[in-house]
Image (cartoon, each protein chain N blue to C red):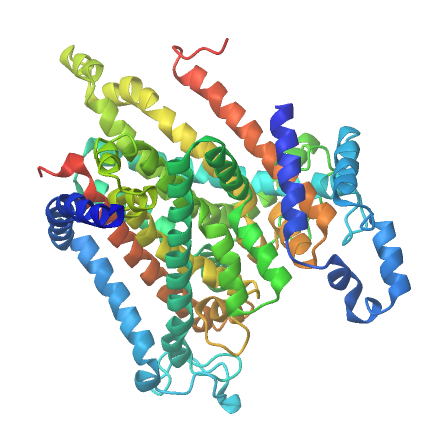
Amino acid sequence: MVVAALGVTLISFVISHAVPADPIVSNLGQVASQRPEIVKAFREKWGLDKPLYIQYLTFVGNLARGELGTSINTRRAVTKDLALFLPATIELATAAVLFALILGLPLGVFAAIRRDGPVDHLARMVSLIGVSIPIFWLATVSLVLFYATLHWTVGPARLGPQIERPEVVTGFFTIDSLLEGDFGTFRDAVSHLILPGLVLASSIMGLITRVTRSSMLEVLSQDYTRTARAKGLRETGVVARHALRNALIPTVTVLGLAYGGLLSGAVMTETIFAWPGLGRYAFNAVITNDFPAIMGVTFVIGIMYVVVNLVVDLLYGWLDPRIHYA
Amino acid sequence: MPTSTTTLSATVAAEPARVSAPESEWRRVWSRLARNPMAVGGAMVVLVWVLIAAAAPWIAPDDPIDQDVMNRLAPPSAQHWLGLDEMGRDVLSRLLYGGRVSLPVAAVVVILASIFGTLYGALAGFLGGWTDEVAMRIVDMVLSFPALILAMAIAAALGPSIQNSMLAMLLVWWPPYARLARGQVLALKECDFVPAARSLGLPDRRILLRHILPNSVAPSLVLMAMDFGNAIIITAALSFLGLGAVPPTPEWGAMVAEGRELMQQWWISTFPGVAILMVAIGCNFIGDGLRDAMDPRLRLR
């Protein structure tokens, strides 16, 4: 875990410094960067006058004390920024994963049960369209259609304009509002999650359908499935009790990988839905070359990957009791 | 005369590998692909868009950057089938021209990235040892960083232009090909034909380029087909974020962005997205069919 985290810091440092941009011009502007005394003060302030390895050691040293430096953009501690933006992204990504599971899992199961039937073809189309759809377009068009034209859903942002933000405990508006016992705010937060959640889910739903279908097909051809059928169990019992649980392991693996991807890949969805999350923060950091923020974001994403993989490993043990971790 | 013996034995050794086995295999793949309705349909869709892009100056009803300010934001009509945008430009003409940006950019990115990545990975796998170690750690490093954010960082640093977004995409696009090629080469290296070729005195370079590589390209081809659609989407995404095509260039992603704030004028951002979607689905159909056609387990069907 520690080794992985150190690896992540090195990678994020190298990448944020290898990008061929000059943080001076992008942060001071054209006029100020012509004046040597301002440039010199800027370099000293942000430690850019020191050699690279010193900059890296400073970064790691700060990290050991739980600090990630100060963002040049927001003038706040990067840890504070992340505490603000990360929960929004986790909330959105979790909603997306739930939607993708609710829609994709049954589709994959039914596609496998009736192989080459109409549901199977539907599943194939859905997963191919899912990977082919440009998410920024889907987000734009679904806002136009479902919000502006049909008025079926609420608009962008995490809460409606008149709703007061719940007091920050976890940073997840759904959980915080429940903690306050404020069901109105809770309902508003959930309704704001639906459209962006579905849009983000579109990218991974096809993947889940596809993986579930193929592992289900594999499991259904196993001997124990035949045994279960032979002893006269109803088909639903065979599928739900005997096959599904065994078929879930590859789905969980893919889901773990996809979840990590969603955390970073939410840039487009967050931009269009005015969602104050990590993706937008990363985008702003990247276009202004705010390197402390870039390193902070990369570091957090890397850690999230490690954590998600750990959770996936633990889920294996729960799904298949034969898997033990010593 | 060592040189002449090498050339002689090389032709002898290369003959069976090149002429008999792979050619008939490719023909079989091709015929299976041609019988797959989804792959054929996908190929036709992509082909149609390529032809449209090529013929855009002749078939477009209007100039793509000509502004008709008096009628700006006009909805689709008999005169302007897909309406006019905020600047009063004909959306249909811009749509037809849009492929002239996205399609070549995606093609260049996928082709160059696959060539570089394949050579890089094949070399790493062939040489083995610490060269392989170091080479693959570099690949892991690039892959561990979210590709879109890295491409955004590079494109933003270089400044918005088509060339720069292409360069940014290239830099994040090659690692999967390297990994794929390395895996293939590692497996093929153990095949009998490699020591056979070596015992004939062929130089390593020739064994790698003429004997191992041709046998290892199949999975990369599937990836390329699917990647082409993906590259179209990312090209458009970078332009959408303002990091690619500069106005007034007609580019599909930039067109979607232009219509983003105009909720009532749905035609501005809807149609370019449909174009991206069609090409991407077409590519994925081809890739899917190609994978089925190359799958040895399905051979008997």
